[in-house]
Amino acid sequence: MAPLQVGVAFAVVAALSFGVTTPIIEAMGRDVGPLMTAALLYAGACLAAVLLRFRARARAGEGLVRANVPRLVLIALLGAALAPALLAWGLQRAGATTGSLLLNFEAAFTVLLARAIYRETLGRRVVLAVALMVLAGALLAVDGVRGALGALGGTGARASAGAGALAVVGATLAWALDNTLTRPLSDRDPVSVVGAKAALGATLTATLALVRHEPAPPAGGALALLACGATGYGLSLFFYLMAQHRIGAARTGSVFALAPFVGAAIAWLVGNRSAGWPTAVAAGLFGLGVFLHLTERHRHRHLHPATEHDHLHRHDDGHHDHVHVPPVVGEHAHPHRHEALEHEHEHAPDLHHRHDHG
Image 1 (cartoon, one colour):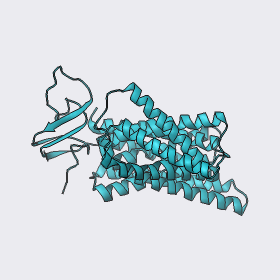
Image 2 (cartoon, one colour; image 1 turned 120 degrees about the horizontal axis):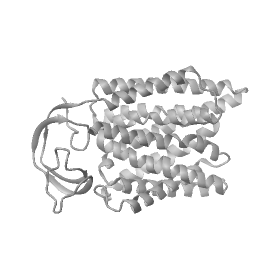
Image 3 (spheres, helix red, strand yellow; image 1 turned 90 degrees about the vertical axis):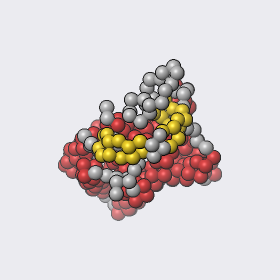
Image 4 (cartoon, one colour; image 1 turned 135 degrees about the vertical axis):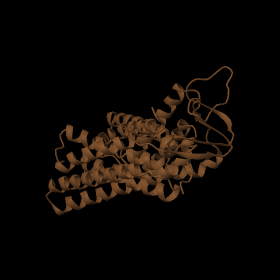
């Protein structure tokens, strides 16, 4: 597969892993405090990081260093504490379908922030894909809110649903900031990043939940939330980082817009029939957006300056021609040096291709 296709595939897996958990969190988090829900989710993510480390004992890039600590703390505050707490609070008031659909705002926020902060280059094909997926997200959000408000009778219930919807949108903005701040860490060992973020987030939210005396779920609910955290917040973040490493923050965020549709589809299958024709149209737009990402081609002559770094790489990508004795096949990580090189080939905005396009 081409580098862009590999990155898109990782982003799709991340979206699926996250999307399936939203209806479960809404069901299992009833009568549970939002901070306690967030603590259990990221405790599960921490467990996933431990299992990933046990399975892949070789590191997949340079480990975290002291200079990464401030960024990690900020990422944990935004993405592992504030965002999941807002999501849990909002889902209890807006419902699983509406909450899932409103998560589409995360993709739009991520693309805009990546463009503004990192100046990531987006070709016409990607711009069209992002526009289609943002339009699909808007259709889904409108359809979800319409269905939720239509099912509510009193003014108080409508106000509560509206507050829940705003909380979910706030969660998407916090996660978009998290995604953007995480991009420089995508070249580090992803298991270390997942483990550090999850441990910080779980510790912070559990402490606040205990201070506020938030109710905890029964054993079955706690196990379900831990499982959701392991898959939707641990494994999903792992694959998200692998995608960011290959295709950058904007493209990863755009493809990740599939996640809300997955959550809404599952909510529909288990009995929530509030979705209407806009959801069907949005499904087609999502499919077209992913197709445009998968078929993107980016090629021009570019210059690589001499550098020395440590990250996950292969020896068949045209950039890593150093010799191993004995030979190494497949992806691996170790410190290595690149000499200056100018060439032309198809590439993605990965670690070696974050050059300026004028």
